[in-house]
Amino acid sequence: MRALLGCIFLLAFPALNADEPKAQPPAPPQSPPAQPPAPPQSPPAQPPPPAPANTLKPADRVEATPKGQLKNPYTDDNAAIVEAGHKLYMRYGCNGCHGGNGGGGICPPLINDAWVYGGDDDTLFRLVTLGSDVLQSKGYSRIAQENVVAPMPPMGLIVATDDELWRILAFVRSNFHGAPENKFGQPPEAVSPNR
Image (cartoon, rainbow, N blue to C red; front, side, top):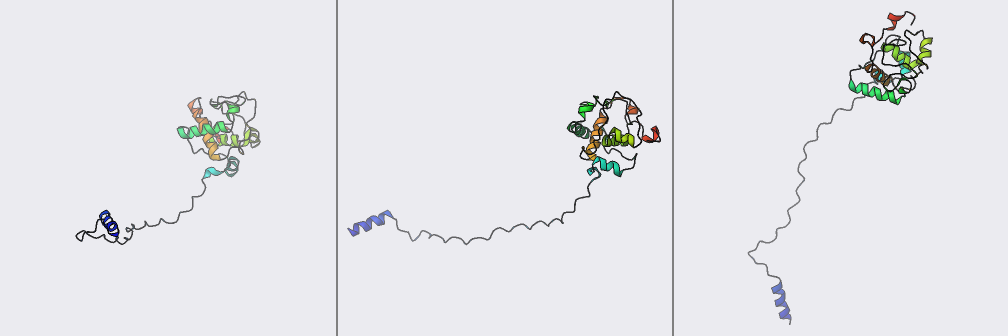
């Protein structure tokens, strides 16, 4: 019986032929492909530039700048600035008194020829920042009349930065519908020496 089992075993597993190649041992592991050299390291990061001028609160900007020297860095023909100014105008609630596009309400319209205290950048910035009562206490006087019910409240501690206020004023200028020569009013020196 053993012989029979041995024959079955031999038939079940064919014998290795001497002519067949023997299994090759596995190849030795290859070293990983060479990595390209690391790019040179960039120099250490430079410190950020000093804060731009637009980071002051409007009230601080007014205190730091002599009368007549505030100038809007933006023009009213830059659509992105005007749109940003409109959003800020709405966010800070200017529309509550002056209307959604500056057409007026309980406060004067911002789109006609009448700049109550003057239409130059310096005067407008100080008016919005200080409010009409404080502006008058600093020697400014009315040079135009409107049907005004409420005084301009001081917004200099409410508007976050002078940059935001300049954007709002660019929006206001973009909606001006008066005579072109009156768009920027008159500088304070040309109107009255006591302002």
